[in-house]
Every structure is written in C-alpha cells, then in structure tokens.
Length: 477
Ligand SMILES: Nc1ncnc2c1ncn2[C@@H]1O[C@H](COP(=O)(O)OP(=O)(O)OP(=O)(O)O)[C@@H](O)[C@H]1O
Ligand SMILES: [Mg+2]
Image (tube, rainbow, N blue to C red):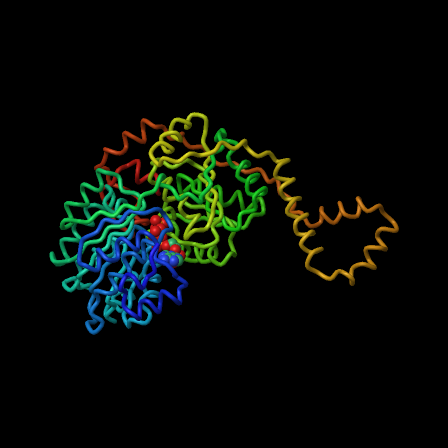
C-alpha cells in the first residue's frame, strides 16, 4: 500500500480523500492511478471491496476541465443502485474540485433527467439502456467525453449488455481513454474487451483466491424443503448485524421475505419487478438498519457497498462462479470481516465444487443447525446482554425488587423467568417456499456459450428488450 501523496494527486482531491478517512491507497489504486493519469487504457481487476471506484474515479476527476460545463467523463454500470452509489462516491471525491457527477438510470422520469443534464454535469454515471435513450434523443451530448469507464466490466460485456455497450462507445470520440474494472474477468470477456480498447494495460492484483481472504466461507448441504428453517436457525444462532439472502428468482425472493416477516424478522426484498421508488426505499432502510435482512436476486450482487453487512447467505447457489464471487463480496469490504454461507442441495454438490475450483477457494462444511441450536443461540444472546448490564450499569435501584422476588422463589427460577422474558420467542408460523430445479453443472457450462434469446424481463434493465442468454437472464430476474 502506498500513501496517496506518492501518487501525485491534485490537492483538492487529496483533501477530500483525507475527509473520507482514506489514509493509504489500496493496491489497485496504487497500480492503476499512475497508468490512467498517463493516459493509458486500463483493465483493472481486483477483489471485491478493495476500492476500484476510487481507482477509476480519481484519475477521471483529474482529467476534467472544470470550466467546461459539458459531459467529459462517462461511467456505465449494470444496475441503477450501483449507478447512484458510484455517482455519490465520485461526488465525495470531487467535492473540493468544483465539478459534479450525475446518475442517470431507468425507472426515473425522463423530464427530470433532461433538466438535470441541462445543468451541465461533467461526469455522468448511467445504466446502459437509459444512457442510450438519452444519446438517441440527443438529450445527452457525448462529443466532449474524454474518459469512459465500464464498471463491472465483465458483466457489461456479457450477452445481455454487449450490443448496448458497443452502441454507446460508438457515440464517444475515438480519442477517448477507456477504463474497465471488475473483480472478475473471464478470459473470453477480456478478449472482447481488448477489441474495444487501445493497447490496454492490464492490472491484476495478485491474490491466491478470487474471493476476499477475510470472508469465512461455509456451505450447508440441505434438501430444498429444509432451507428456510435452516436459514432461520442460522440467523438465530449468529444474529447478523445485517444479512443479505440471495435467491434465484423474484418469486422466491418474495416468498422468503414474506416467510421471514411472518416469523418476526425485519426483512425486505429487492428485485427487478419492484418500482424504482420501492427499490430505493428498501435499500435505504437496510442501510439505516431499519431492516436486518435484505432478500435479493442478483440485482444486488454487484458493486453495492453497504457497511455493516456481516453475513451473506446463498439461499440458492448461484449459477456461475463469478456471481458467487460478487454476491459474497457484499460482506468483508474495506478490510472488514464477514461470513458467507451457501445452501446446497445434495444434487448440487458437483456445482459447488466447480465454484470452489474456479474461485480457488474452499468452503467449510457446516452441519445444518437445529432448532435447539437456534434456541440456545437466542438464549446465549440474552445471557450476554445480562452480563453486559451487570458490567456496565448501576443496578442499586433494582436490588430491592430483586430481594423481594428471591424471598418467594429460588434464584434459578427467578433468573430463568428473566431470561425467558428477554429471549425472542421464535414464531413457528408455517412457511412454504415453492421449489426450483437444482442448478446442474452441465446446464451452467452449457449456458455459457448460448445466446440469442429475447429477454422478457424489461424492468430490471430500464424498459428495454435486449438479446440475452436465457440462463443468465433467468438468474437475475
Ligand atoms: N484507500 C482507501 N482507504 C479506505 N477506504 C477505502 C479506500 N478506497 C476505497 N475505500 C472504501 O472501501 C469501500 C469499497 O470500495 P469500492 O466500492 O470501490 O470497492 P470495489 O473494489 O469497487 O468492490 P466491488 O468489486 O464489490 O465493486 C468503500 O466504502 C470505499 O469508500
Ligand atoms: Mg465496485
């Protein structure tokens, strides 16, 4: 790690980085910032949560002519929430520079966006569909764009987005600098990438595993019909601060969310069929801690940076290894620790091994936790709370009452009653989750090369049809 001041970064940016609490540059920042500042095209690959946003954000901000109120930097990201987040991070870094980044995405009124664009933001962060709409209507001018970034580049160059990306890049001056970033970069995608770039420098931060070391990875082999209770039991034992539960389909996300709510958990779901307003409010509640469990499709798998996520559950094992890497990367960010727990049906064990092999990581087997374990876990939590109260609080005002109680009952009975009052009673409302076919290795491999289906899933991509791999599209609907 290097100090930022060794990277020759402009003073107003340095000041902002200090305010943000960035002391040292991360490896991807140390390596890519000088290359990008020198004007190179760069493909940057580094693990999840290691600061790729600032790695492209800092050099992009430095190339902006602050006096020119035209779009000079363009970032393309796969989801609306990610576009918003990246624009926010760029605005934090640029706050003393005197320029602005604007997020543009589907699901928001065109008129409002057109007005905001007229205001002259120098950087635009957009989802591809909506960006193309604006380019075609000429409500966004891209003739002054000097730097183009594809965040989550392998996803952006995948079947579902590639045509749009080609169209977008065609509309940007050839002299542009192109930067591509992701935690994963399968070889066939990298080959496509280089055709869109000029002698790109490739930076790959070396790591033994594709996943972050400080995420403990586990799997539980469990038949489909026991997954939901297993999730409940595990959550009760480990009491995550914030947890994300990934499921394969929108329907399952809804069912799991309703099930968790029925059992007394503060859970909300997020997927592409919700209105943009609902998606934002759910995510904000989760960030503020008013929701403890976020149930999601792969719409939340990439790039989202939410501090306090301690646990990621793969209720359904993801279709491809890259998706696994991004999903579990929602925890263990910026040096923090986290846990990832994947549920695997017996028939999916081969698929699990394929993921382990590709990501070069090992998941430890966990025995399915039982309801007794869960009860003990909850009681343990109460005991810890009591212990903390003993350590911290002056209890003299309660001591008279305690003595009175102990005159009529023995101490064990009194304490047991107190523990029972303080322990969350688990509701045993029956919950049924409709089953899905297991993921199979053959299917997953097969799906890689296939394409050409028209996706019916419009909303997630901002109301457009686009060519897509059917397996892939289903995965994130
Ligand atoms: N040099 C730094 N020092 C401290 N914190 C940093 C530094 N750089 C970035 N961060 C913080 O680390 C977190 C993760 O950064 P970021 O979201 O850019 O990761 P990423 O590599 O893009 O991850 P992903 O692959 O999941 O998209 C953010 O909260 C960011 O503000
Ligand atoms: Mg990122």
